[in-house]
Image (cartoon, rainbow, N blue to C red):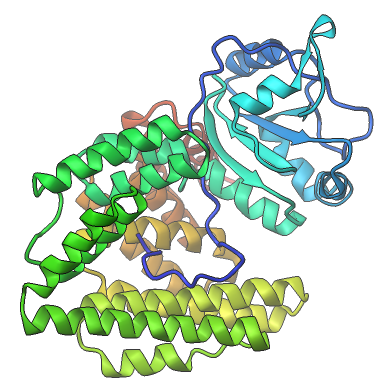
Length: 435
């Protein structure tokens, strides 16, 4: 993954997905209020919502809110009233749920629905499959532009729970994907699923599966997975194993600590002075020779630039935002050059999906690079429909609509349930039609 050296700033850049919920015996939820933004809210019970979604084969969007939630009201007035958001959400069946309202005689059961979907804090926005199974979620308020970016990501199927589960099924021996799934389940309060993945992860590590025991970097990453799994002793054992490599192992850990110090220095300066200065990370990069640590450092630099861009966007400073996003893409290109082979598949996915979201700001060179990376990933995993879908998106971004059609068609052969792919295929075909 691209985020192994994430800057630990307050904003928490990743937007993770919810654990899957079947909602086997859910009761109807509250109908939408008369004033709740301008989305076309479905009116009826939850069971009727599922029936309509299955019949139309449309994904579901649910807004969990409360009467006392000020940010929920702001979401209604700003985001859910924005014309671009209204248009983007036309592809979903939208459902409004007062999470604290229960009146079984009236077919209202918002409390139970909130429990079943793991709602914590408000507003809480759930994206689900037509079956009701969770695809992803957003917690808290997002302005229209930020909300649209998340909708586009979720529609593409990138970094959603269902996407991650599918990837683990395709690569069951990928220890690091399994660790990501474990963390994702924990983040969304599916304790049983998270513990199940943690147990599987520990078992595979004990058997020495899924990582190179001769690689300090891979042992270090395993130590982070075990720490996330609550196995502090196992994590420390991996670090001890690195030290047993002798001077090279000790030196590797020292340099890893130096990178952590550089990142902490950047964070501390921001927290105390509201200033982001990449100099500590740049100094580390200038001194380091190990590819895997250079990769981590460039990712830290990329994350810093992404954070800067998001801050400038909040300030409506378009020029500085564009400058920071350009610097972020430059850092991502450098990270790709240094990325260890084992992790390139996951890096490619994240890199391309992020750049597709920024397609309007990319020049021809960046678009060509995204196609190159996406093609590499698709060739490495030719039976993974999500990689073929990303290749199609990159090709479409570059204007190669005929090649995009081929990539989308192949993705649908492997994953016929991918509604987002089907939509993009139709758009690519339309782009080829005579005007």
